[in-house]
Amino acid sequence: MASFTYDGNPNALHNGDTIDGVPADGSTMTVTTWPALTFNPFQHADFSGLSLVDGGDGTFTVTIGFLDAAGATLALVDDQNATSYAQDGSTFPTFTGTTAAVTAWLQQLYVVGTNSADSFTIQLAIGDDEGDLSATLFNFTFETLIACYMEGTLIATPSGQRPVESLMRGDLVTTADGSAKPVKWIGHRTYEAGFGASEAFVRPVVFKAGSLGGGLPVRDLKVSPQHGMQIDGVMVPAAALVNDVTIVREEPTGAITYFHIELDGHEAVLAEGAASETFVDHNSRAMFDNADEYSLIHGTAAPRPAEQPRLEEGFQLAAIRRRLAEIAGIPANAPTGPVKGHLERIADGVLHGWLVDTVGAEAVEAEVLVDGEVVGRVVANRYRGDLDQAGIRGGRGGFSIAVPASAERLEQVSLRRVIDGQILVAPAAETVRA
Image 1 (cartoon, rainbow, N blue to C red):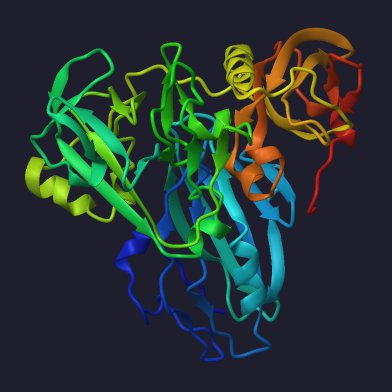
Image 2: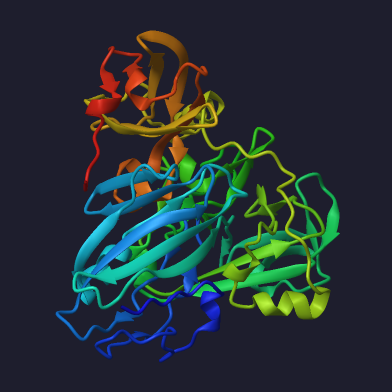
C-alpha cells in the first residue's frame, strides 16, 4: 500500500502536478487546478479543482481534522443548515463518496474563528475503501481577514472627495479626527460575476444614505461584510449592523471589486462621510490581487494587531442596533418565535455557540445556566459567516461567554431565553447534517 504525504505550501503546486507516490494499482492522485485559498471572514477554501484518480471504483473517504487551530471551529454548511466541529479532537467530519461528491462536500467546509487575528491549520486526509490510497495529508492555513470598500466609494481627502480606486501611494486622506495622513498602499481584489451571489462573505453590505444618523453616510456606502464601521468609538463589522431596511445585503449581478486603504497605522477614514477602518495586516495581505506589489515597495513586514477596538457581539452592539433601528423606523416590539441553536464547545473557560429566533429578526437574549444555576446572560448577536452562508438570520446569531471552571462538559450547560423562558439544552441542541 502506498502512502503519500504533502506538508508544504499548497500554492507551490501547479496544474497537472502529481502528489508524490504511486499506489500499487498504478493509480495517481493529481491536482488539476490546485485549490486557491480564498481568505474571507469565515475562512473558506475552494476545493473545486481537486481531482482524485483511483484505479478501483473511484470512491474515496475524506476526513478533516485540526493541526493548530486553538479556539476555532470547523463548520459544514449546506441547504440552510450548519454543523460545527470543535478543535478538541472529539469529532472529525468524514465523508465517503465519488470524486464529484467528495469535492461538493469539501466546498461546504468553513473554518470559524473566535478572534479576528486567529490563523488556523487544518489537515485533510484522503483514502479509499479498497486501500489503494492511504493517509494522504494536506495542510491548509487559513487566516482571518478584515475587508474593504467597494469600487466607487468616495473617500475624503484635503482636496475633496475621491473614488477609492483613484487613490495612490503618497496621497493624503482625511481621518476621522480631522488629520491628513498619507496612503502607504492600496490593495484591491476582484471577484468574478456569480461568485458574490453564491458566497455570503463577498456580498456587499449597503449602508443607505442617512442610515447611521446625522445624515451619514451622505450617499449609499458599500463595504464588504467584515469591514469595520466606527460607531461609538469602536469598529463594528458591517454585517453585524444589517437591519434589512436601511442597512441591507446587496445581491450582486456582476463582478465585484473591493479596494482597501493602508496608512501607517490602523485608522478611521471618512467614506461617503462615515468613519470606517483602514487596512491592518493580520497575515492577510495575500487576499489582494496585487499583494506582491507591497513587498516590492516596502519589503516584508511583520503582521500587526488591530489598534482600533473592535466590537463583535454583546449588549453594547445590541444598543447600537436598537439606535439604528429607531433611525430606520423599525418597530421596537418585534415578533418572536421558537429558538434554534447549537452549543458548540467550552474552550479555555468560554462557552461558544449560536442561537436565533426562528421568527423574529432581533438577537436572542438568554440566561446561561450551568448545572441548573444561572451564571450569566448573553445576547447572541455575533456575526458568523457559516451561519450567513446557511441562510440563518444573516449570520447574526453567534455568542461567546465566560463560564465557571465547574462547567467542563456541554451537558452541564443550558440557555434560557429571557423574554419567555424557552430552554435550549445542550443534548437537545439542534445539530444538523450529522
